[in-house]
Image (cartoon, rainbow over the protein chains, first blue to last red):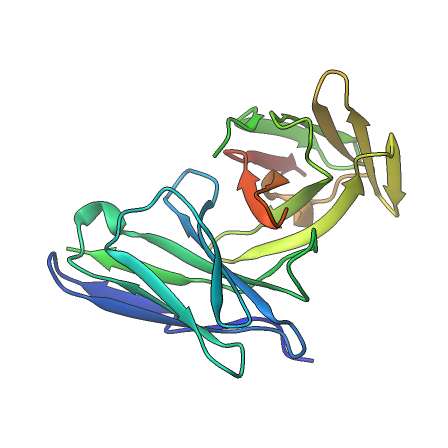
Length: 113
Length: 112
């Protein structure tokens, strides 16, 4: 079975632009979470979605938004990009909302110039 | 995160045991996890432990949990060069218990 997939793998944007990152969860998994990993740090929780509804949000500004589709795939949008948004963005999927193990994708590396 | 702490670096010789330590903050965390990240890659789940357990062994990996001290450790027996990576501990948080807080990661270097 395919694991969590993310696209694109790499992305370069300039300050002020907008970006959309995509994630497909493991087949059968209904929950998707997004994390930001800045170089040299651990991943920071951004969002969790389940059955197309937001079920958790980390301490990130409103420039960050996400959605989940009926097929459980998800998009993360970041508006008005800042240099500090440069990071590896990780998507994780789990079967449901309870304290389930999360499986991570390879990430999208975003560079903001 | 919620101050999940790890030492930054660890260096061991091939064949020795490695012990990576972590302290966490939320005594209500039900599950605690260990993930491995190789350069340029995502996170690979290594193992996890339920909070009512003291120890879990899985092949070369042994996880020890001290709930009183909120201390978690990962022991890798017979460490190999392929074990060189960054290791993250994580605790689950939130109303769903499915929002993970990660430590800063421990960079393990295995010397041949």
